Figure 1 (cartoon, rainbow, N blue to C red):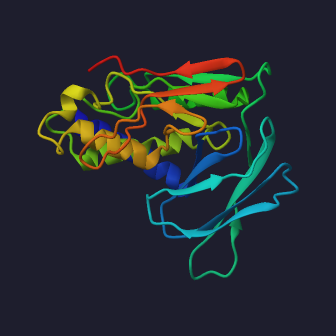
Figure 2 (cartoon, rainbow, N blue to C red):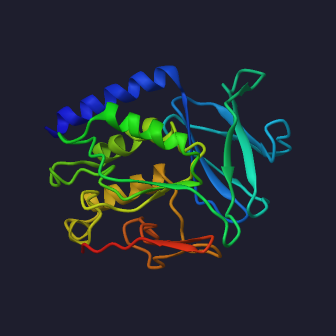
Length: 271
């Protein structure tokens, strides 16, 4: 069953990438910055322009060279709190002289205390097993996009596969996490993405202790962090400050977000 699910998932990825070589996912918004993770399926040179109006993208981040299926991360900083911003990605093959302009997307920095804001919560897509239906999930994402929310929080059971824990390899975990870029990239280009672990991500303490570093806990943590930048503790976010072994570093899976007069905290309750 696991191999069948991965094959189906890869098929969907190929179909989407033929039509769209680029996925953009925002994350880690603060009162003065936001993170943009850009992914291409080929080698390109890319840069980002941003500003307070679609007609005035007066800030830019210099060119970075991407590798296939390896995210390029841009930090859009120097922003003002409680402000709307727009951005676009420009890209070209290294041998070409001119850049292609991507679509213009939007985001909003932390709103002032007392201000109203909209956010979306999703959970339990389970696209990697028999319970998931990709067409239904795409419909859900379309509905979320209509909300023009400030951010999205996923409560998990999203990327992982702990149903065959002793057989799932690092490459399997890479495929599962990479596959979701096609879905989240449809809406999270304008809705920063926060991820909280579900019960089936495989990153529990039990699996982390099984034959490390060759286990689904280590594989899942590394590939999740690779493809989806989650907040680390800093001036804006609170979170787990204990680094884990085997190259995982700060796991970035426990966090607390303060927005307006509200706080959003995640906790890993399963050891």
